[in-house]
Length: 261
Ligand code: CAA
Image (cartoon, rainbow, N blue to C red; front, top):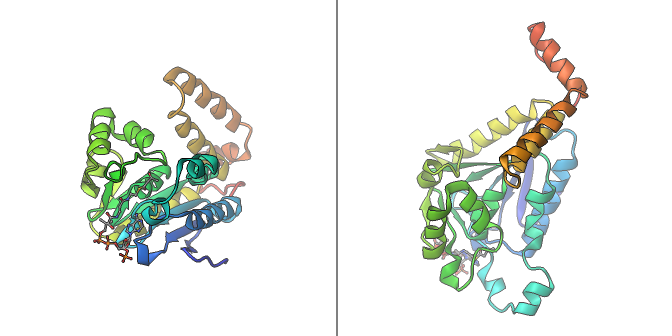
């Protein structure tokens, strides 16, 4: 595979692409060169027919300690607005169609927490330390934190966290429903994310793609429009071979051999 400077990319299990953020000297602080590598790696896996799902993680110490404060400190309005600072960070949720699981260990602060929330499923370990501390720097979350955290845990709690800049634990993230599962150790967290990704990758790519699409619609549409949208996509799947293959295999008590894998 291709080698990058700030991330490590591998395929540790069948159908699973793993991306590890690797900028140890700055606790995986995010800056544009790193984000561009992330975008490139995500797009490559998204296009690769042998890959069905992805896992994004950092180190045991830091998922990502946020946007690079040293890089940002001298930025002015014209540069930030004129060059759409941080817009490239939104490519993950906007363009990647295959499911991405974040395995969060250590610090996931500011842009790091936002990056974890851009993924489709979040797993955390007990040692995870999350938060939106931007208020302490005289700014606000800039990569979706005010929107995604609020939708995930509710307004009052999100408002409190964003206004105080107080960090929260992996246990909190799990209790509040931000994370789907919690694990004792970082190793268990990453392993479980890989295992879930492998399960997802074992299903029909068409059905998986449609699942992600309709669940994400729930974030943008009202329930009535959302349910109608779901039904249209549901109807569409009766035109896929995999619907026939899946239902025939059930009737014959066999394992489905998906066409779209
Ligand atoms: N940007 C740049 N460098 C960072 C960084 C960041 N966000 N976070 C850590 N580093 C660097 C430190 O400067 C330090 O570098 P040096 O060794 O050269 O001094 C190195 O990483 C190790 O960090 P610490 O010595 O601080 O490690 P620690 O264990 O004592 O503390 C920490 C860890 C609590 C995460 C602390 O580093 C910290 O508070 N970091 C900043 C977190 C933060 O505010 N993130 C939000 C950024 S704003 C943002 O993300 C905007 C947005 O919405 C997109």
